[in-house]
Amino acid sequence: MRTAIVTASYRGDFERCRLLCDSIDARVTGHTRHLILVDRIDVPLFRSLAGPRREIVGEAELFPAWLRSFPDPTTFGRRRVWPTPFGPPLRGWHVQQLRRIAMGGAMAEEVMVSLDSDVVFLKPFDVGAFQRQGRLLFHKVPNALAAHEEASRSEHRAWSRKAGELLGIAAPDVTDEGYVGTLIAWRTDAVRGLLKRIEAVSGRSWLRRLGATRSLSECTLYGRYVDEVEGRPDLYEPSPVNFCRMHWVGAALKEGDLRAFAEALAPHEVAAGIQSFTGTDPRLIRRAAGLG
Image (cartoon, rainbow, N blue to C red):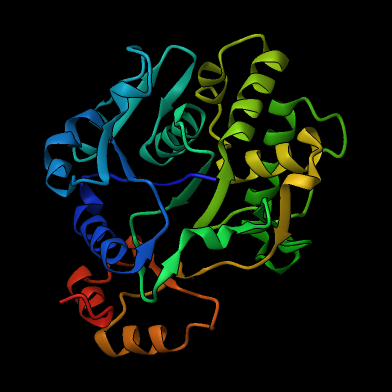
């Protein structure tokens, strides 16, 4: 199955995204192209990352005219906000999810590999690893929420509840399965199926429906659709394996910390994700990744 890599990013993560691109070019094979999805105002900045197999996609190519960003007055214009006539204004994290969903429903490739812009590949990786004799690896961790702290567990359950509501799943109201991952693969025909399902359940366009909620996890939405609505286990191989090791929270990592983090990767882990909110210097990550 043809496979494209998709990354949603923004100008605050530009140097991290450049590092991701360099690591893909050096270590990743098997994909048709790499698509970087950004706000329309960020297209000129990100255009320098484009190449023979890398495209910069402004959200004007994915969204209708009513969904556009403006400077957020509550942050004196330091951040962007997406006003919508169908609910409270959207923030960047929500819109990045909508971009990935929109691209998954529109692209010609059969498989979309989704990864964030604060990921860097540390080992050679062929995206064909997601395919097993015609089946696609489906990221699923049974009873994953049991290991979360209470605040995180509540948030994940809210995402699960909302996904069930959007998809018209009467029961169970909430599941404890974990579907969230940083380097995962989706079947694009399944994305199109879940968008049709949302429209059939709500009687509205999928973008209007998803744009009206703040409790959204695209991974949970896709996971519950595949597990409880689509009903095609012959197409998937459920797996708790995550190819990317994440550093989600904490203080900024120093160079020695980054080397130790990279050296601690499990054999199946090919990439590291250093959450941008930790404030870790991208130049240190680049050196630790051996990319100059």
